[in-house]
Image (tube, rainbow, N blue to C red):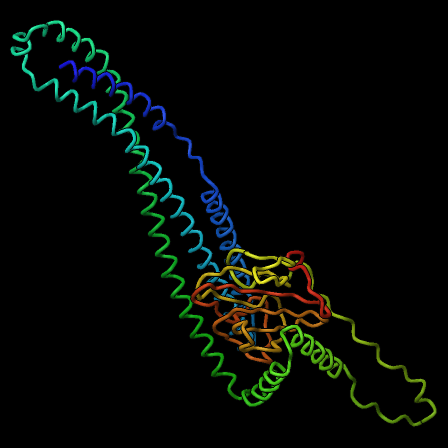
Length: 404
């Protein structure tokens, strides 16, 4: 019996120490949890921005008078909705991770608080096994019984307090698990919505291809020429330089005036002023956007593990993530290129060029005219890293300064 009393007193003492830890409601997130919170906020912002772009593009599609332009706007609006669903999935995964971490912390606190209570219960059970009559028959049992009564009187309020703490922990745990179930359900709904929107975009793209079959011959010639340039280029920078020169030449030819009528007085021909040179276009600040939803893992000028300095921004996208045109322009190259996966080079005019690399599938071809947000391809299924570079007259430009 003395051993049971000692166990009871020790259990009460240990329970008090465990309670001081378990009753703390402060959730102290570590670096991983803090990063998950940042990802959650970023993903929610990306989703809201994508939905705003989609609404604006849907309005433009409704107002479009030309069927081809309407189809292009609808595709861009649907691509924005796909990116919104991808951002919702990123947010859902971050939310599930955060809630799961909170559940694990609460279960750990509950287990720590339960252990001394189990020891306390075991000591009480040991005391209860001895009937009062047998206690009186034992030598010195009267003093032990008085001692036990005093310990029990002191222990009962503490027991009530400790069990109340456990009950509170159980209520909080059930509430957190309810939040976890809601987060998992929302995540599953976002994935279902993403699959439906991808199917709808595929149908729109097939419809666009059927409508543009009559242009396939000239487009194929231009694509073959672009692929030829890619084979001759020493590296991707050389390819972009060549395409920039080609774009400048094409722009100059397009700006040339038609043949002038022969003047009646040939001597006045020298007085005819030459047409002014076309003004160089300017890619407005705020008109540029990142081509894919995800987390930026490398910025301009950073050196990677291979010792290569980055000329753009690298984004960790979702597997199969939707890639769109970062700004309006014309596709000057689209296809596979030497270790970069499938790439797209977009000529924005005025010496501005974008390079998007790392895609596994393309939905545009050489010569296509793109609006900002037009779908151009899909990210890979594993280690999906999309890199975007913006150049002006052959020099890399900081994309962050151009983002809207």
